[in-house]
Image (cartoon, one colour):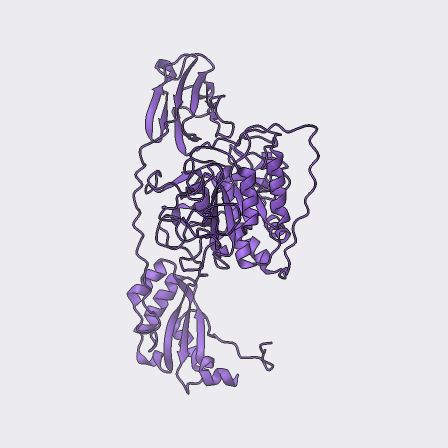
Length: 607
């Protein structure tokens, strides 16, 4: 109590008003009163609303990455934003090293001299400065077939808080020495496809703790034993291998994503519902956002600022999990494989209620970045990483047929189906079907109807895949279409990326239209939103240290909900505490209470 008195804290009092607007009006009225009401009052101020400070990167497209909010990533960033000692291998189609947003977090092989044509570190790979192109057999050309790999890598660790483009899950804070490192391993090369087993072993041997794999086989229940052995080796080295579960809308076992030795990831939309294309079932370990996801693509090939684009797929969900695991190792550098996975699974958000048809089939639930890190933070550090004990796979009855890995199917375009119903909406149904010869990992079509409302426009947005053929069919069960005459003025239309490609209505029992999604499309012009200027709060308390009270600004703050419901005042030195009751009556809210309660007789001490 004596220390409080010495600091003048005992002279602070507060009254509580009913609402913020009353705070403003009561304070305004009090200040307008004569000096008699102000006698003995040294300071008076309103309580301002405060909020928890949550770090957000200054990347201009971060506001469009809503998939991050769905896994509580902003809260996780309060604990760590990534560390370059954590190396995440991305086995995919390579990475555009010229990309403006993929500059600071690229892994550097410490034992290799770049571009000298020598295997300086004697690891069997020449010029593997940033990784290796296992498909084409080179360390100097790390950009293979398309943007798929650049997109996945950007989700994991695009340069965050650099004022450019997007943010990565573990992309750092823009300062040197922050952000997880990306090791580039190319399996889908410019000329050849392959080297996946070799790439996994390369990652394990060269220091990658996490391997992100957004690829898989084209048929269920088949695999390459060499790849399985490579995964086992990676795990035995204490690493974690993450795989996309596949885009077949199937419960079948698609390797390697369904293998016990990997973290199989299903795709969700931002609300937590299963993406309609995602595989599911007992082999899925966890789920993450994958529909849609905004990230980096090859420079000049994106539809958002030309260098970025939104893709959908379990391929996009996989790097979210890999990035979150990288945050875990950044926070707890000695965490074991088992500790990381135990925390990831035990803290995942239960999404069964959002997916009633898939209860228990989306793994542990949706990964929660903050809860995962919080779990790790409560555990004692492991001094020696303990590799996971994995079940031994049953031996194959005979040699396993080797299938080529999945041809990448980029599903980044949008078909809109619009149906304006006639007077008998229950007769109308439609479907969009992917060509049966398309790669099996491409996103299939959709279906709609029958409808219940007459003369109503129903629109349906469907993700379709570049270069693939689709068939649209619309049916009328009565056989008279949806236009015209007594049917009403019904119609349907198809728009591909906003451009109409088909319209009809007077079609009798049915109509159809087949089309191929073009390989290129005109860039979508996305207006750059001008951010609203951040309001600088004028200092409100009328004190020598905070300035004078601006009542106009206070009224604005009250209207914006930034003023609390308390008015605090400090009595002048030497003024009796009884004066507080008189001042409270003049303010005309509640009775006065001390702001700082007296210290206890036995004060706490730091241990």
